Length: 295
Picture: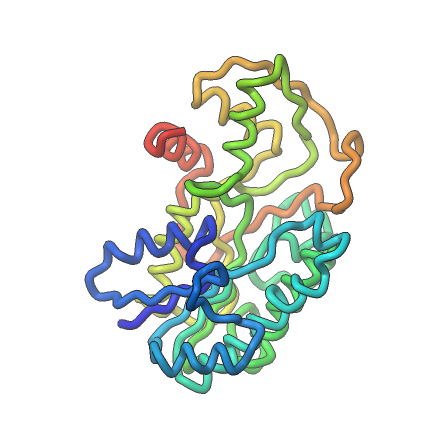
């Protein structure tokens, strides 16, 4: 099975490549905008050329512009191309080449602050920032190419396509909340962390394993939620990080309104998985990462 991973040098993409290489049935091709021969997913000619070269059976798109504060200021145009236009182009060529397609999206597309969380078929979107707007446009472009969705499943099933929403990613090779908290805890007398931003931490190792499960088992096409089991506030997340790392720096409670930031975010955005086997608890993911991956 020929698998093309796009955005292969990012936090998720690099781990996905690492996990995919463990599967002997997969013939892996990669592409990242930082590579000399990486494709430009916003350019149809570039995408077509890569598909002709690889002829993939399945494509996973991890590429995204994720600097949320920059998007609020000056990076809207590039984010709209990468997060919004690019997924639609990839979906178009996946249909043309009869390749399965999986696109990564985010909990940020929701803004209703549902305290009970969001299932896959929840469709009242309210993006609260420009990054979220671009990611929602990307979803809409994929859905348009694959004929719309009913109850979170695509109307067109061949080739199969998937939108996987996830949240609060952490892992090796890139700055993330865990690395930031540990770094700050080692240099400050105390930390202040918000109690009113709530979602589900997700280890990219577990997410990658689930993405490969989808790619190789091909369940019904549609929208899937894949995050660590359970949910927590940033404050509880930080407490778990420092306890696991054996760092006793005190953490003080605060709220989002106490921080001046350009990007508005939801208080509650955690995702509920109703379609796949349960993930590990987010606490177990944190322990695995910190104890076994050199943090």
